Image 1 (tube, helix red, strand yellow):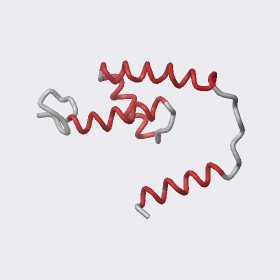
Image 2: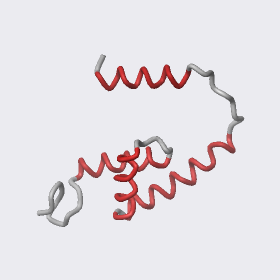
Image 3: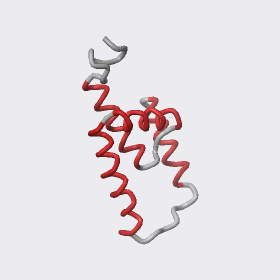
Length: 91
């Protein structure tokens, strides 16, 4: 059996669900560098996630066309990141 997967070397279903979620984050350019590399490698090796990545890329490309661009307030990024850190720590 391959490490971290089924005898075929493919990831277990739970692992695949997590990798599939990382495909969406990758399409939105919302992954850390190491997570992005993992997502790219998975997209290259998984036909269903490769197709998902193509569909999501088309959708992401269309988003800027559907709304007016608005400059967010300067403090917004800091507030969002602070909230994410609190959620991650469980506080």
